[in-house]
Amino acid sequence: MIESNILVIDDDDDILLSAKLFLKLHFRNVITCKSPKEINVLLSTNDIDLILLDMNYQKGASDGREGLYWLEHILSIDKDYVVILMTAFGSVELAIQAIKKGATDFILKPWENDKLFATLSAASKLTQSKKKVKKLERIQSSLHTDIARKFENIIGDSTDIQLLQKNLLKVAPTDANVLILGENGTGKQVYAYEIHKKSLRNQQIFMHVDLGSLNENLFESELFGYAKGAFTDAKEDRPGRFEMAEGGTIFLDEIGNLSLTLQTKLLSVLQNRTVTRLGESKERPINVRLIAATNMPLNEMVAKGTFRQDLLFRINTVELLLPALRKRGDDIQVLAKHFIDVFSNKYHKPAKSLTLQAKKALQEYSWPGNVRELQHVIERATIMSENFEITEDDLQLSPHKFNHQQAVPMDLPLEEMEKAMVAKAIEKHKGNISRAAAELGLTRAALYRRIEKFGL
Image 1 (cartoon, rainbow, N blue to C red):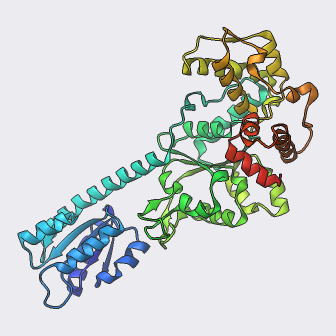
Image 2 (image 1 turned 90 degrees about the vertical axis):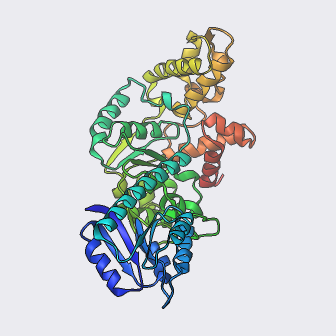
Image 3 (image 1 turned 30 degrees about the vertical axis):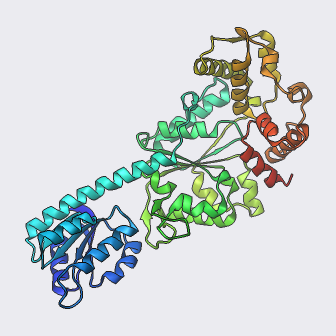
């Protein structure tokens, strides 16, 4: 049985019945219709692999003009559709014209069953090949090469990190949904990718989606895809991130930023394991492993009614909490050395070490931006240091963020602490968003989202 869906279009009931009886013995699904005017509806509600299209529909017609017209129409919907034309009035000239306009093949009626099967079997292989190429091209265009990926791995010997690594090894091969919690900069994406690498899906794609930076109006089209014509700029069919992650892992970062409306739409996809592209009505099955992450207190949000409890149950089969860098002091020197080695190599600098004063400064600093901030500090120091040792001055740490004179109390709830840090950074830099974002270890877009979130 060939796993292809075939659409047969012919105005002759006997032809349709004959085709269906024969083809359903060899192909997964056979759909028939009498009028090509039904093409739009059938293509939007079914996942069609092959189209067997008659060339004449009006009584007495034999020139094939209608078939060529509908061939062009089908290919205008999606140029990758595989269309095989059929007619009882064949000619070499007509066949050549059909192939030039994009037909895959041309057969005469009445057909021989063996020849029809061979033609459709070859066309089915072509369809599958086109789908694979199309998927790879879209994945390639959607993914950006992360030049820092080479040092994106779990570094640290502290008790918290050892426990996390132990739990990660337990959950990674299970395919269970995972929710990763932690402050900004603690490495949630690093842990998500590590789960993927140690999973049974490690040969497939790891799809990172930053929900925090995704415009609400683009949520459905970006995640679920869209059909040509679904909106003004939809000039071709496009799969969403869930479809592109087929067989692999999809990482939904900053899931706590979703509105209740978008939470409902996401929950429906996760429950049904299907997506429906904008502008279509057919459901497409998906096979992905879900990892989600947020720095927001989801349980508190559930209590306040701003996050759906059923969605929380769906995404956190297993929950991993990443500790802040200030709570894993034993790892600061290990991480610093790791980043020095990485950036010395990246920027072709001689190997450097930290002075005792620099090490002490690193230990006493509060690290509001966590590992991401440490990475940024070491990268800058590695570039700017003129000696073989990195000094305390080279680190350029903010004086008011040392543990002995904390600018922000460390016993505040996580969200309040983050709000206070954002407010102080903006105040310190007199509203300069770029500088405040750099100090916090955030992008400008991420800082703007927090300003809006906290009403600052």
